[in-house]
Length: 232
Image 1 (tube, rainbow, N blue to C red):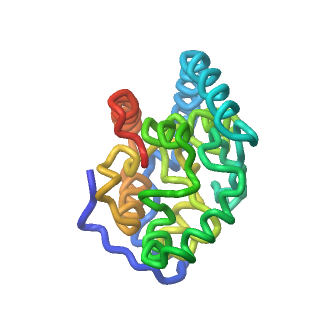
Image 2 (image 1 turned 45 degrees about the horizontal axis):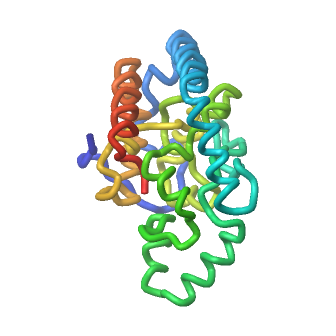
């Protein structure tokens, strides 16, 4: 599923130098209309099917730690607009200060954070949060982002402001499409995927997207969640 023949760098983006435009499946009005219909249909279906699970998750979060059940985090969307990406809260309330103290006490983890914007053993994550993340259930509220049009069911991973420079020449392409709730990166072996390879997977999707690819990614995502191979 990885695209080893695509070469990237981390220099600042240069408009028009991304090595090719986005696929017709992300430009053609007819294809975009079908993609939007698929987004709405799948999001509504999943919201109905997962409602009992969502209620149990909300209760578990409330019982374990104080704080909101759902939180929003600013992400960069299509046209470089900003939107609030919704998630079930999987961290402690003072997550930022916990992270700062942890990185100060464990400088060997700082490189991992700078490289991946993730920690394999994140001290901020609650017990309920670890289970939600392993099953990718913390991302269920993003179905509302899909219905609002902030996101698509399938697309490049939504990024934060600090990640823009790391996308380099790929970023102008990223701003032409809606980020996805799932994508090529999510259905790859994420524990073995570097940040650079994540960008390559996003680029592969943006340049080669088809309806068949979207359906295949959705099926693989469901399979990954069912068998517990979600994000860590």
